[in-house]
Length: 290
Image (cartoon, rainbow, N blue to C red):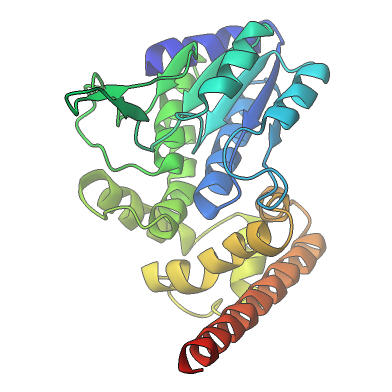
């Protein structure tokens, strides 16, 4: 549905409809949201984003939040890294006049019949871009959410007559998400990761530069290890202990001093997360031993 989905978004942009990107609170969801938000802004869209709270709203589309977004005037819902299993929520969105485009990479939900056969259940969205669907012809099935978002942007940019080279800037962010989401580093994922790491070592993103400096790796060549065990956990920590919006705010930041402050917050949150994890292990061991 990538052709159908990008066409819906193109028409919404040209009609100045209110678009909301509904993301997720982990690194893949945050980076997917960043890619789509920046790309739609470049296309001249009336666009905002929403990342759910892990504790109060949980994973995926929250029904109460969806009602609020509808009341606030959301006309087009664009998901990233979620949506494939939001059957009831997307039905609500459609019933209330919203257009819905899903971009996701998770497995399609199913039920089993009496003979044990899997029957897939898809949401009633206007377009579903998820290459885990049975009828999807796309040959590579292991893209993360940000990888799918990047692919979506390449097609959208072509339709909006924006040079393809501009969509390539998002490979850097898709690479971070690919490593953080622990998808298989094969085929396209390996290419995305390789090129993205080269880009990251010369990044122009003020927020990423601040985070790299805050965690003390600004004088090192950044490799997949640094993403998976230093940068990624800092991005993930915001969704676990605070609001994931903080990580997105860092990526979008254009002020160096502000970026340094947010990066320091991310580092501090990750250190707190590490302490809580360590305490959890000690407590678990004590329970087992006693």
